Image (spheres, rainbow, N blue to C red):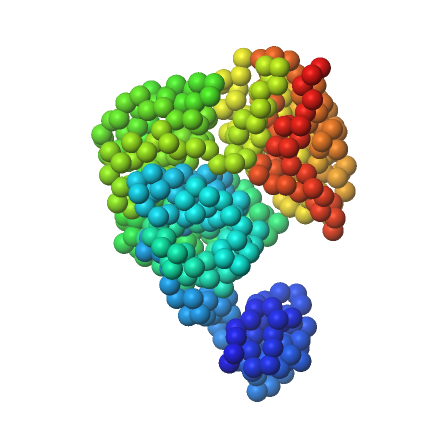
Length: 465
């Protein structure tokens, strides 16, 4: 056996091929045979529909096998590895954790939706290896990254664990020192089918991967999440707005550009902490990151000293520019709860009109469109519905489904034009929030990928009017 492949097109003479279940699996197996694979690992249920030739090896779980092989090929990893799951906030929490570690002198990295940070440097490459544009990469890529980071001297690593990756067992061979669950809302129902199945995929992190004696970080504010994790793990560090949590906050002051609060860790109060973040949802993300940092060995004093240095992640509630007194933000929110969190945070500090620009992705969960429309109408004074990666759906149909929830919205399909209209129609004291793309730099229509960056559109806006 020369190499192990999961893509039949890449199989060469003598390679092993792992046949991951999909609609085209028979074609992939045949292609692997033509390319002279020495072994083809196939899931047990396939035994009745494929010829039992000499290359075929039947196994119980090919995804788990792929994970095991990936660890065998690249066996090293940083000493401390932490995984973050949940619907919203994964990227921000991972970003905050890495900043805590770095501020305290650790060589740290984090991997997720926007790429990989090594220290404070964002990159899409490790050596000559390109990082794929996935929240959590496939098993072989993930372990290659872990191996690279270990030999590069990284001791602390945190990464996002998507529901897809957990369901597909991409990280089942990673040794974790801790894991965190941020929150749970309906998402990715196009893949999982139901919210229960989606939740079940997330929980795999705690009962299939994390050792039951290793710390789990979860919020007592979300009792259902906490209750399910407590079935597998008794070493839970809780965080949240309720004072029954191990880590909580008090005396919160929401200011225009920052937040002041008291942080309480195990009953110890640290007063008048000021951070350059706004919104309850960012405080929740920050407390989750504090929990992970604390259980990784950082003292309370180290955490408190590092807090003023924490910065938001690109594209998350990011103030891009102030134009003639109009503050223009972008954010990556693409679920109902995330949209509500972002708008609610801005409502508390905006003294003028709040203008919201957003759309919904095509070929994704359709049930959230009308709900997001209702939330936008409830919290924003003006709503502009536009396109956001329609993919293979009709963009006008997507917009019409959102507008069912916000009858008074303005519909402008062209995202560039929608952003311009939002700023043009605002005045000094107003806030404009452009939702959905955050750090992304493309717009997807069918098989066509167009260049588009919300940030760039705001930065190049002509403010000479």
